[in-house]
Length: 620
Image 1 (cartoon, one colour):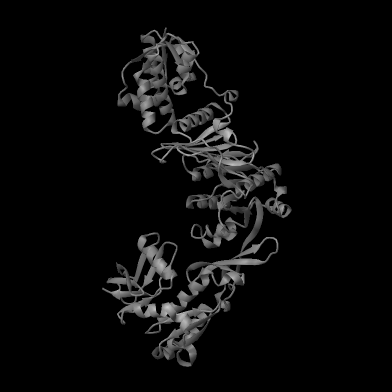
Image 2 (tube, rainbow, N blue to C red; image 1 turned 120 degrees about the horizontal axis):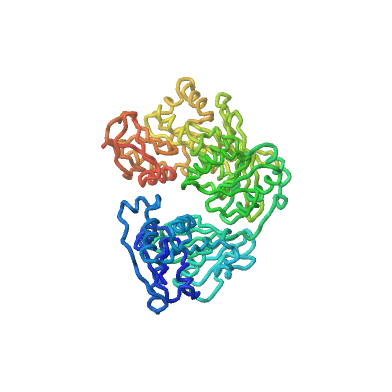
């Protein structure tokens, strides 16, 4: 008996299975070279099916060595042109011709291939793809779980470990004494991948060289292997609790808010805090109240009911998924998780298109969730994109913020002409404002309104920089600034500069105060308390390099650190911190030096600025 399989049944491992069952015992298995070429091409491209097929060929070779079958390779390897026309059926036609030439039973799991072969008078055995869920039992990795286990971590060369406990009180612990070897993990991985293919409760989310991610029933399983990882590793995660909205504090108020009209909600918290659990509770509550709800996930692991369709990346991009969803017209979309800039942009685009959005975001504080939007979207658009922030800790709601925009004078500033759009973040329960976000001299600052936090806020530092810049523009010598709260500062200048800085009748310092909205007291450097001057005063003196350098105040933007200079356009200069060399640069036509943030030079420069070291520009 001659048996000739095509690629579909070789990948499935169906031929060796039939041999083991006795159906093909003693048969001659004829493997087309075209099948080998196709499997090799898939394996080289990192497709898991290619590796599965090559493993099946090795198994058939072992069966032939044992005498159970005869194994032959037949036909010729297809050339590049034929392989290029594979999608047009060229390779399938070559395989069918070989079955005719060798009077072989043609075995396939491809229904189209089977119908064509039968129409051409070829003896065909069609093996339907295995999709019966009942054939897939309990996975080996499931044996490591108990009812309190959230995740299992298996690595070759180590004992198995797991995260166990109540939500928010998980501990990472060893759960076995036997060291796992690579062969065991390979077997586990193969079982997981095969089960995901065979069961309609499983699918492979990601299949790249070195990494596969599988969603199987309630489990999200990541399989890493060399060379991507330094050893075989399997991590399986599952939800251990399922909640509904009534299980949370503020549930009634949040329900009313969500039902009132489509909202933009960020669900924030640290990893494992219960963010996704809350998000799925929100999704099911909305679906139960006759809203059309969809999800955007990678991987898809939210445990939601069948009325909520779960979408993943389309063509490798969430932006394409969003375009498709806008055609579906959901009322709400659960986006799990919003991490990268592209994710925030997609979230914002869908929200501005009128879709209610619930995004899951990693953040260590509730306010940090909003700050992750800063620089990614226009500041004034943030309240239109996100109007509610829910912070989850240990499975409980610990903070809810209401986000809105008002035109007002920022807290701590004085002059009415300093009024501007301000994002106000209020405690949802009490209505008390807790933060303000606004633009302060072209830079975005987040100001805590709690007095205990305010001195540590970025606005004090920015105020100091702006005061230094203003005073330095009219002073000839060294300038030092002490900021006392949001609306007062003391400036110290040389004896020769004090009258010039104050101006006739105090007019010059009044102008500066009005521009900045801050009361400024001008004194001489000799009057500065020793404890306040300390290192910065000495550093500034050193930075001047005996009068050879220009003290400057760098400006940090979202993309650059900008160093202003006076009269150095086109020149090559040295930038120093407290007299120590940092780097050499050529000043641009506008008189500024721009250093891209994220570079090693920018990091060193920002560190010097944070430490309040005097930055000077010295002509080379």
